[in-house]
Image (cartoon, rainbow, N blue to C red; front, side, top):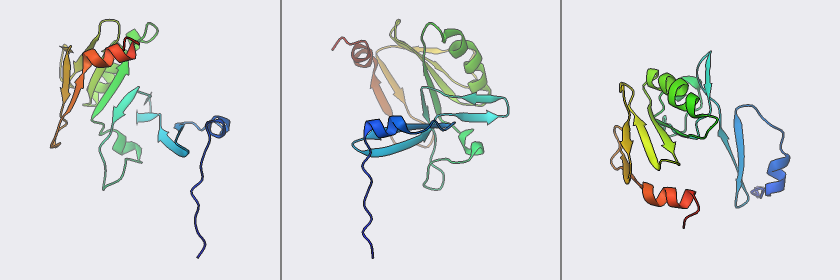
Length: 154
């Protein structure tokens, strides 16, 4: 039997790949990583959150649009040009689809946590804990350390 060799990619080779709608290409230690960038909820909603968490389906990552509608978490990091969209337009759409939504505000050093049925966000500073339904453990984030690193203070 022939031996299969794993292809080692370079950063320049990945940059030279043609753009493919709905896909993001990365290269980590020579391994090509391809991930979906576009998430479609319906015929009029296509989003690209900064970070998103999707559940595994049958031991595999979601591959069909209807599975993406089961997202557990969307995160947007606001900047001057996106504040209105992130805080109003996207937030209401994510809430309508029942997805927990975090808005990260680097300037204020806080996270707005919007639950699907909330009229107001929970404002989180210091430590953020997240435990999705059905999970045995939680994710704990030291926001002070995260913001200090993100803002180049470490």
